[in-house]
Amino acid sequence: MTTLDPDKLVFIDESGFDTKMTRRFGRAARGAPCVGAVPHGHWRNNTFIAGLRSDRIDAPMLIEGAMDGDAFCAWVEQMLAPTLREGDIVIP
Image (cartoon, rainbow, N blue to C red; front, side, top):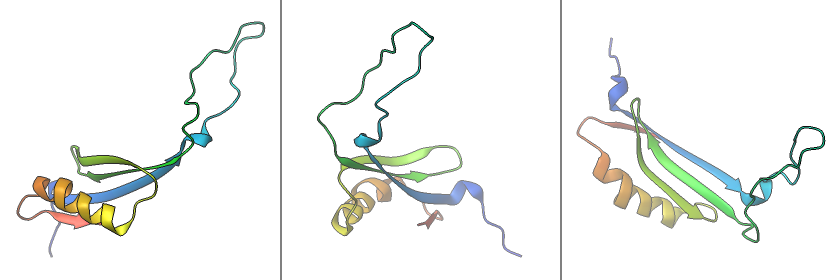
């Protein structure tokens, strides 16, 4: 029976978000003002990608817009590959 060493696993995680997802209204105690900062005028999609290990995050990158093939290949070559060691298993 073969077992996997959790320290050798690298999971690729990609998450997207939009700054328009910010709430326009907040909560405060009755009679108290609700004060907070919200990004203004930057309504774009963003993508965050990273390699997740059992003990850390490797090669985090944030890009404006959606991830495409060229951006993904550049991330793998320039950011993820240098962090990999012999025996690592990358799981997309």
